[in-house]
Image 1 (cartoon, rainbow, N blue to C red):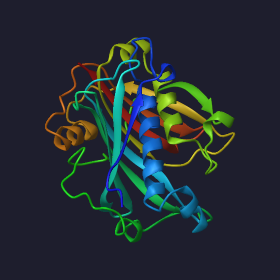
Image 2 (cartoon, one colour; image 1 turned 180 degrees about the vertical axis):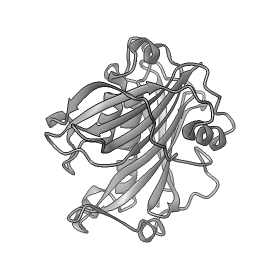
Image 3 (cartoon, rainbow, N blue to C red; image 1 turned 45 degrees about the vertical axis):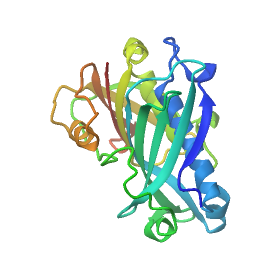
Image 4 (spheres, rainbow, N blue to C red; image 1 turned 90 degrees about the vertical axis):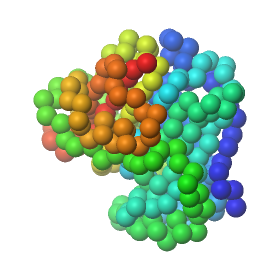
Length: 266
């Protein structure tokens, strides 16, 4: 049984922005692909789960980017299961550079979902068969739970179309990150070296559904994600740059489909 999945990949042209550095959504895509490969190697991949009428669905994710890798840089992407907390199956992620220095760390909370009923099942049964990897932590806590924010402003609408939908039939988790990037000031993202990011996926977005994207600057230092990030790892810095809250809502309603918070710095 492969306790930790590791793969070396180059930072490709389609994964960078104007600064020649890896983008946030590309990091999510790298982590997603590594997790899929590892789950398959562990016997709980897409096909095995589908045969049992189940699927893995990402529910929460917390990420800290210490340094964004450059174009053509060779990086090591790794991922490993950790344990479970209530309904969540926890999985850690890391990117290291050629000097074996950690440049990005994350932790995701996954749900095991009944595909027919679209309801979560207990993750413990599956996670008990996985490598526990005790003491091997990308983060020491998280992923963070995010509270609803007030005084958000609507920025745009996005309809879930063909390129947004994955094999389960809903918007893929990395697409939400692209939507968030598109309502954030381009210069802030381009100039950011360090990024702290937390997202909660609250409701699935189906083909043809339209999501209103709302955002506002974060000005309070004691908010949920800030506290979670500070306690998650001693190397997490306090915010030194811009900070924003985001919420996606179903068109014409107050029902949130995701909440997220982003802080840039360094």
